[in-house]
Length: 209
Image (cartoon, rainbow, N blue to C red; front, side):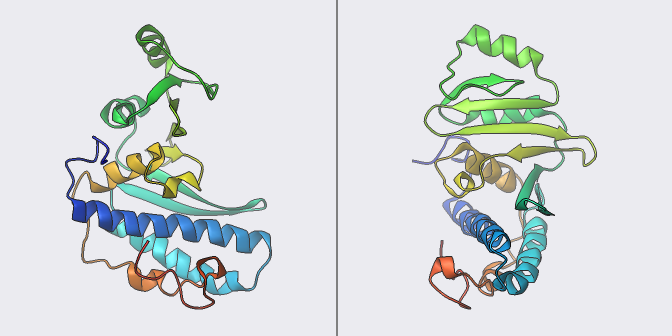
């Protein structure tokens, strides 16, 4: 069943974003593994991945993805562009995702369940960051990046590729909220990404999810 915040988007648009976004997440996870294991394959995949990230950002202008390399590994940062208020992002989208159970300005217990009064109290305390808990489907952490003037979405990278999880739904909502560039075909770039995890050596991720 399609989430209510995504119901107004066409099935074709949802499918196209799903393919592009899931490949981005899977490539990120695979590249991080290659980095951690010091695999030579990373030297081949990294330029392909950077090209994919740049083209993804151009295709979906409401989202900004940034590839970050550090001593502890590789990760992908995801920002909602043109949004500078975490409360607004919560009201417009995150609060409409099914299963919301609790919010707060600090980390929440996994089984937290708030009543309406508790929601109001916590919401009034929110400033530049908000933790959001959902029943049985994970959590979200939104924070304002003052330097980029954008709200950053922080979620477990593995769950972002799962369409049942709130992070996936939030990204799709903002990606499709306004027009995106259908002329940009990311499949050709993804096809150059080499991954043993997908059952091939130099065969890439293929055209389907």
